[in-house]
Image 1: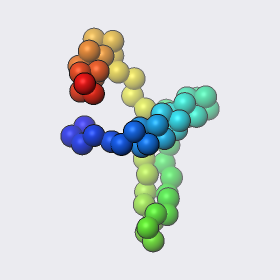
Image 2 (image 1 turned 180 degrees about the vertical axis):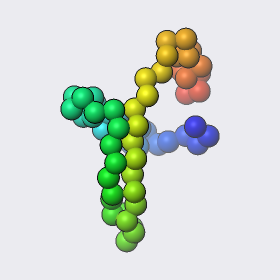
Image 3 (image 1 turned 120 degrees about the horizontal axis):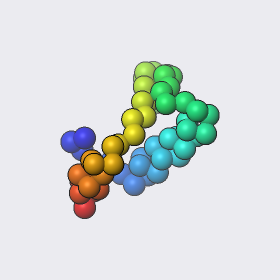
Image 4 (image 1 turned 180 degrees about the horizontal axis):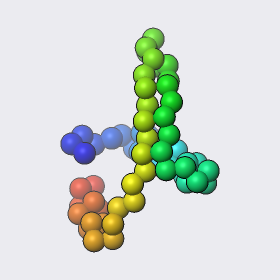
Length: 61
């Protein structure tokens, strides 16, 4: 990921992830309307392997 997301976006994505996991879903496709346009949204959840956690955490420091 090259750009940093705002706290609000990260929080919304965390909530979405929790809802998907509770529904036993790892992927979803939908369309949303924002600023007068329709956008296709695809979300895929991919667990981070334990050996990569250090690298992921360092991205946020």
